[in-house]
Image (cartoon, rainbow, N blue to C red):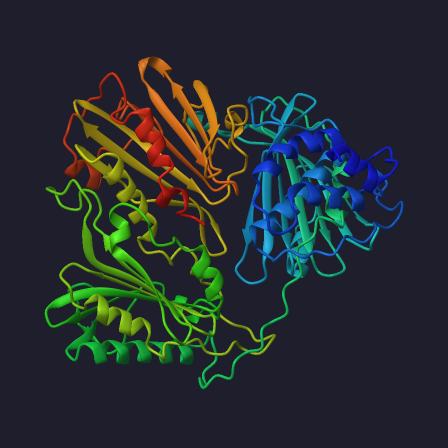
Length: 639
């Protein structure tokens, strides 16, 4: 049976305002072939979206109640859950804007939807998606946020009222009792000359918010990206998207019965923070009798730990003590302690132990008879950490993760130059039984949850893999990798990472960038690579000689050779079937103004030879760049 027949059999006679099935099928066909199984497939999700959306009439949101959505079986926050919501949103937008064509600003029209999404958190899991498309020749960007506990968001939206820039503004009730607010606005602003290629001096926008009976809040916005463009979509066309019953969050799973705890303090309180401080102090002192806390590096002795961000210890579900300094004898070190209530998820989303090259030698996973799992890493030194070091090697810093049988996770990161504690001692501290989370406060209790500890969890693990991979791919010459930049911080860490690097070897030199994405916006091909979000790949040349292939492991490879302004640029993408993606770009003209240029001042300027010049080609061959992008420790860095 063909996809078209599948749709026809499920839908029956389509109504006037239904989805353009052929467009959805062609847009999803490639994504479906490459999508990981387990959960609802992209096509099945689109079918579900079509089934529940056929009764909603554009322009007449009161016409009749929407049919109930099919039962949702995906796990909140999982890739399968994001795929399901993505498919429902894409189908709803296609119905709302029948002339929709997927494209980024000034880019080619593509079949694959240019839509990216991630999980909103912490706390109850929400959804955030955004994409780019074209309607009647006008380039547009859209975003949708879904929040499960939306009463406060709705109240804040209502309190703001209609903007002075609004040309249309109002409220109404949806077909299933939803409270709906809508607006269409025109904004004008002065834009500095250096930002005119990134910002528009005039923007037309439309937005719709909805509060559903179950408390779910949806916020859909649409705007132009070029000053001279008029919005080709009426705001009423967006209402069916936020009332579409397929555009729905997965239900939260039933809470696991809480194990009886011997801890008498309550999570999120100062008393509980003091308990954890005392437990860590005792654990350290058992390993080193001459241990003492310090106020800072080289500072005075302190009876209790003094770390950055003291409010971090008041987080109910992820308390963190960040970078507290201590000494053992005359040797100083810093320790970071983080406890995670949903430890299974945090463990699964953290960078796994490397499997190849240098970093694999310094990471082990141990399973204990009682069910505890322990991941112990010896971190690598950075490139150029000393003037005479051109290569990474093992350091005296450690990252220990202990996944307890009760599902909680303890992370302990120790930073030291000369070892104040050994790896074995650090492991014993991480396994300390008294380092345990306290019970959550009773429902409705106000807590100090202002500090978000996400992004504090990997402590160098995300740098070791690219350092070791680059070291393996370019075993000779000088290499340098800058610390990473995080992007799109998700529920348990970054959704993307980027690294600048430079290579000088054999009379050649060039700088470049490595970008690792947990879940790219597109299934990549030569046809779709030009539609990648410009903000993520700014100044990367994606319009040269392009080839694409699929490896035996199922990963897609897209290579591009560009020759802008006399230079040579290699760009290679490797993408997993679940859209986990690595891009490596390198040129033959270091420090010539590109986005991937290494800085020439500060730490880098002191350690790198002055006056580095390029040659006829980049210092890595196209095959080496492909091997770097496909390196198992890079492509699997963000699982």
